[in-house]
Image 1 (cartoon, helix red, strand yellow):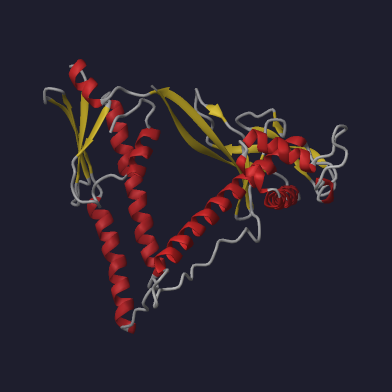
Image 2 (cartoon, rainbow, N blue to C red):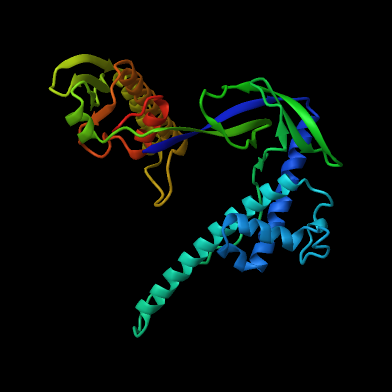
Length: 353
């Protein structure tokens, strides 16, 4: 059975200072076109009933002037005179995604309202339904997606992007710094993302592989199968990994420490929170007190969870194991689905959990 793993490669762009304004102008124009097509979809809601490809064709007929369609109903020329076809289609797909999401949210709200009205029908003191309906986006901040044709000549160090300078479309060559693409992956269309004052290029990559057999099949049909059993703790040894055969023979053990360090850091921050609370003696109901300190604790816990999961996967790969086994304990100690997916994504060899 085929499976796939998807991750995003983030790469920083190196460019001249004045070229940052071109990236900003391209994003502004892209969002203007997305907002325009969102309004077109709201005016022609039947488009949402079509598959994506047919919906894209229908929206182009409604907005794009051609020899066969010289007078579209809602011409895009009111927003921009000459937009590249791939730029326009990227904006259409972005608008379709937002329109479908808004339509789903509105349908769920109507369902909740109907249920509340039916429940309150015939009751004298029925609780009124006060939930407000979802509203369309008031402002747009979509990231520009460069379809094939809007970029070319991509290497590990540079790429050519077609950007809007404010007056015309121009090819711009920029340098790329960051993680290179792994081998054997399919590269999707890159997106232009702003992080503070720096522009980055985010690219989704997809790697396909064959799903491993079920645990029952691996254990019963292959006596050489290696199992990595993981014990998660709260003391100094955060995790103890033991590799054993199907018969139970222990082959290797790895202790992953760091518990005292994170416990001391957490205790220090919790002490500061307690001292801050003692100064006021009042905690507002429904509001988070000491938000910055609590955020530090959450970020430290998440960072440590990623480190531990990466070390577990590295140990399992070194020992050529195909099965990871976790004990069922409290909810806080049991690995979440997100952690398990992260472990599988880090491993080149499929891991069954």
